[in-house]
Image (tube, rainbow, N blue to C red):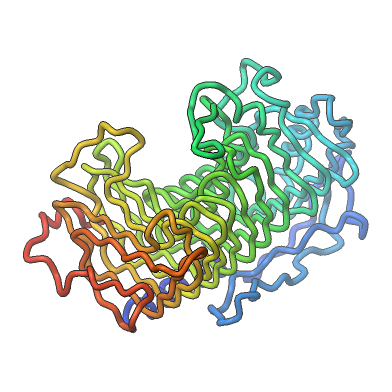
Length: 470
């Protein structure tokens, strides 16, 4: 791991301790290739952000962007490999050829230039590659328009996959267009519609972008929209920096999570705007050392940890920090959701300086998460401990209480801390009482509404540590 990323890990570790206790590279001349050329000012790639040196109080803060490219950088323009960019011709072969050539050259750039629309089918861009590879999208890149146009041989689970890569950047000033509407309309997964109605939704729909088993990644600057399913997914990765993204899909588009991470460590998500039909950011099992700051979220289902523990599985999530975020017009705000019957733990979770506007379920712990009415209470559950909510303010949708802590009957939530929480109704003047069940914690300050339902101290018994340690 490079010193930059080691520093990033140390920074996050130091920040989390504070929360819960209160390179030089050798230059190699690029290999010559008939379709490569030196970088010109017209195609200068977006510089790579650095990892943040500290957490400031200013919500507008973001990583700086030093110029890390030189005149010796080679670019591999997909049009020089045969891409038409007319929005209808299949340009997949050109993208694959450009990738294959660039992969062999240090600090190379695969360029999809501006002013063109490229249609490509499901593709895995795999490594290992030489370090410093940049995939720069300045035009529009999109998949085929819906399931009827999707090649039968292609995966319906994913579209663009980046696999086994290290020190790679996805960037640009362009758009990744998901063409999701025809997938959302498939008649096999019901979802909420206007005025309490039920609409059809996706069955086997592809995630738009997936990073798998990769490390030291940067994603910055792009507009990503209308994904058939998750817009961006990280699985089995370590060292991820996401900065200045715009992610959008309609409010009622089903399962269109903005950024989903699972089995991924050392993640920074900064200065991004996400509006979609599901979670803005969802954090699955196996994640730790995640830092989220200056994110605007909504309409959406908020920022979620989970769901965890499905099918009696073990889930471990720790050291998650969310700061200086704005959540508006969303079904949920800050949510932790687990299934009955799971094991493992969620620990060291810190939410600070969060502004809410017309949010239903602003602060929610749900350990009875279930997609049907047939789930039963179990004798085990994912253990939640050390969860802090500090300076959470704004307005809530009056259809649900603003604070809801539904902890498992068998495994209590412990060490919940509430400080400077002020949540008022978006409409009307009556303030709803919070709900607590088997939740232990403290109020460091008076809250609005008062949360008198938290239990003092610790439960008399906790189940065997072997089930809940991570």
